[in-house]
Image (cartoon, rainbow, N blue to C red; front, side, top):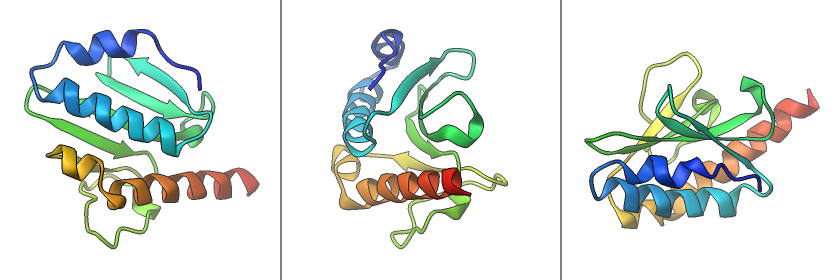
Length: 126
């Protein structure tokens, strides 16, 4: 896993519990997505997780704000969401509003990440 050294500093600038939740979420993302590349995008105020430099290689993003935290999925419209966690109206992306440690550690979040990885692999074959 390639890790962006500035990500931890970036996340720490937000009020609690945002950094704590972001670091917990980050650990889950890194565990569920083998060999993922972590990239800090300061202008967009998010940490991206991808397997290459193109949008098609993007899996998800952690989006902190002063009010909370979101886990965004680049191809979220194509993800199965039996737990109804995904929100948003974008043409391609969707996000999950993170509200608690329990939610971060839930099987539903891990399932979304696994499905996002499956979709990525499918995109790369086509």
